[in-house]
Image (cartoon, rainbow, N blue to C red; front, side, top):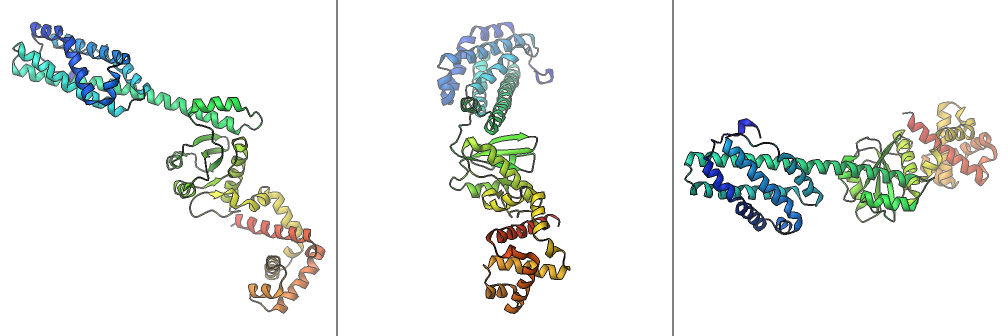
Length: 398
């Protein structure tokens, strides 16, 4: 306790001795009042585990009396004991608010008991007032030590739990050394039951905490050299899409497909591919929420290898690209409409806002440039892929 907070005039030896001989009943009075006001501690203090708290209370009272007799601040010998008691309270699963409430109750009970004993020994009123102030200051110090121990243990356990969860995320993603038994043990230690289905959310940010806190489900937070990610259980549960959109908001992110735990690595890989494509503007970024792999499958298949997609566009459309810009753009537009409308000239003309004869003229030119590619299913398929690749790759350049 800081010397500046201690202002108790030394108590007469007979007064200290009177309180000291009544330490047992005083402790019992404190315990009884705490039990009466706290349902949690009513059970704890009645059980064998409550003996440590009783010993701590008694030791604190005796240290206080020794200090009161000398008129000096109490020694710090009891500080570590109360820190350990705070740690024990956290390990027992009791709430910090319950601990604080018990201290308040105990402080009031200690003051009443000490005041009654002091009055019985004829201590002057100014000394009794000083005694009250010292009791409250001393109780605050003990409470601070107990809370420090509680928070220290809470922090240590949170750090250990986080390490265990990162270990679990690593095991989930280890495709080459998948071990169901090791995974089950790690899940127990991480307090994260393995779900039947999950999905991985890849994030551009290195601070996933805000997204994780915005979700009602308990997620795993993982990280590796490529960035951070969240493993979501039951990603298709009721209301999950809306909740995820709100949690992600404008954060660049991509959600992999729903998979069995054994396929977690695939959900992560595809979500990261989608995130990269979105950042390159090769696939559209949603106004809100993550890009979803299942909604961009064709784009991912086509653009996963950007160089190869570019080569496809360059080779299949080479003859058209060599034309002057205006003619090139008109023919590409016509080719795309022709493929989209299943070669139906009137609908193509309507879509392009041109005369059907103009469409026929352009198609003749396309046949001249592209040869048999327009006449075979494989040729038309490759041309459509080339057009899609060209459009997506163009978007990345702007």
